Structures are given as C-alpha cells and as structure tokens.
Length: 114
Image 1 (cartoon, rainbow, N blue to C red):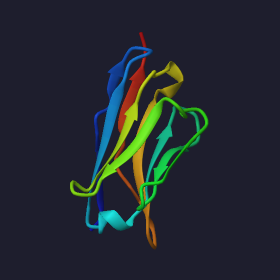
Image 2 (image 1 turned 135 degrees about the vertical axis):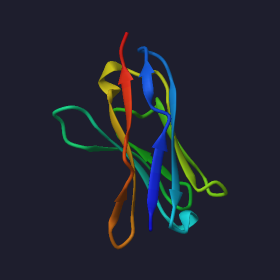
Image 3 (image 1 turned 120 degrees about the vertical axis):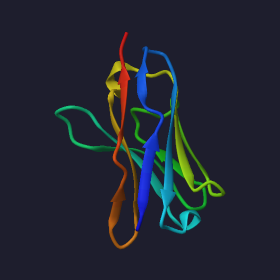
C-alpha cells in the first residue's frame, strides 16, 4: 500500500529555517507529482508547493522566494526547504500525491515562534 511519511518539523524562531522530508513507498515515485500542503488551526488546508515528475515546481504566493520543493527519485523522497520562516507559517505540513485516489501523510508540526 502507499505510504507517505513526513519528518523534519519542529519549533523554530522567526527568520529561521527547516527542511521537511517525505519518504514515499508503494508507488513508482519518479512517475508522480508530489505536493506539500499545510493546515493552520482554524483554517482550511492549503497547497504550498508542487513538483512534477519532470521536476517543474510551483508555489503558493505566500511562500514564493522563501520555500523550495525538491525531489530525490533515488531515495523516493520529496523535500521542502523553508527559509525566512514567519509566525504565519505555523501549521501542520502534509505530503500528498494523487493517482486514482489521493494519498496523505500523517503530517508534521511546524511552529514558528520566539
């Protein structure tokens, strides 16, 4: 079965950096676009970044220039490098992919606070 396992979240001060990882199994990883979503308390889940199977990327306006999505097909892993973090980036971050259905990881908490 498909599994997505996120890691790398934590507590960081404003202006700091974190790198999230999502390890995938049960899919031919190189063929799939991968997404990072986030959900803050009381808010809807939002798409943060996407990377296609070919390596093209797209970002939400709120994170452009600060976040970078990348993938390592040899490791079946997608990353989200987050720089210049702001308190409003605080959320649970989820890894996602889609085929005939959607698949989600369990999420990893990112808290930006002084």
